[in-house]
Length: 464
View 1 (cartoon, rainbow, N blue to C red):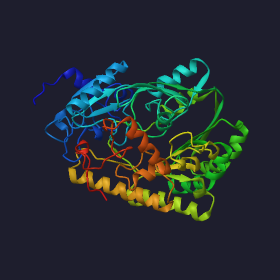
View 2 (cartoon, rainbow, N blue to C red; view 1 turned 120 degrees about the vertical axis):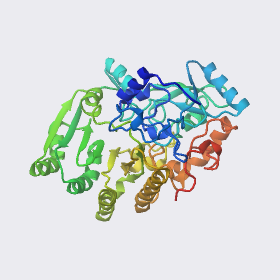
View 3 (cartoon, one colour; view 1 turned 60 degrees about the vertical axis):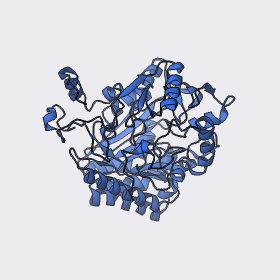
View 4 (cartoon, rainbow, N blue to C red; view 1 turned 180 degrees about the horizontal axis):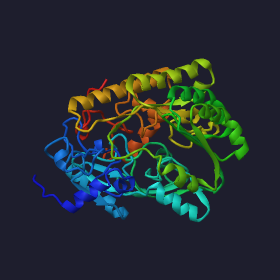
């Protein structure tokens, strides 16, 4: 179908192509635009992220296709909106997709030919609101992550796929409450609000070395200190030859002593270090994270696995980690991005559906690649195959360590065990109870029926 272009709208998109907030607030946009297209057919409408202001004549294809962007969407305002959409889907066989913010690395919030439901609140707004009241909301590291879905909730209000508006907490619909905290988004219902616990704002020590250019030596130091740093309360991320770490538990002097080896090494390699105390989480977020967030508007193809603390407590384990990061850098030209989480084992009480592997995790080791602008179908498929092999290599080095559902490799092997461990059978029971017609299914989510389902026609069905 021919569609007349709108020059003003096109200019707005070009100017904001790599602006996360714009993509969050635009229904059809995803943070990773490869999911706006259809990988298996090559149907895209992408701009070159290195030159997004160029005309569409410089795009990879002569045509601009709908791809996986929903042709119709509903900006959800009331439970009745969702109830009517669910009834329409079941009556007419039209699939549904749910977008909250579009912070999605696996195509869970978009689907070809679907009726799109659009709702949610990004963390940037939530953090700013909490800061006004001198409290800290516990959430994700990136401001475009949505607030609800596995953090410190004490209640949800949602419409489940059977069309009922429900309250879920420890006392009401407790099975659903359990599943919503860790079972994966877009699967159990459309959440309208979630009640969270918050913490009083507290000062945080921040440490970041800069201007370092000898990546593997730096990795070696970080790996050898990871177990100790976890015990002291550090978290944050490692990205290329640098890191941003935070710690709310120790003093500034203790932070300097803890990171002394990195500081000494950085100074010897023409680097420098910034260590300071910030007033609270929002101050840290605005000063350090806004400019350090994962880039958007680029087509990211991910691979990752969780690494347990035990990987860093023996020389053999530490060597395995360094070897994996070396392979990523030397063989694939990829500098690993490592969220550092340090989940305490004491929280493993079975109260949530989160994979129990998380409670012994200290790193999520990622090895993601970028899909080049204009890549052919076969070239894109080869990138997914390479990502599959990288993910398998990490997971083979540390069997049973688990994988983060939202950031795991798209074609994850043994995905139910990798994402949810022993929790999957119970999750499947909850899914069957509240969504017997499978109205809210996502790729490799709870209740997934396999790649042959027409819902997943834009995925490749033979990656191995």
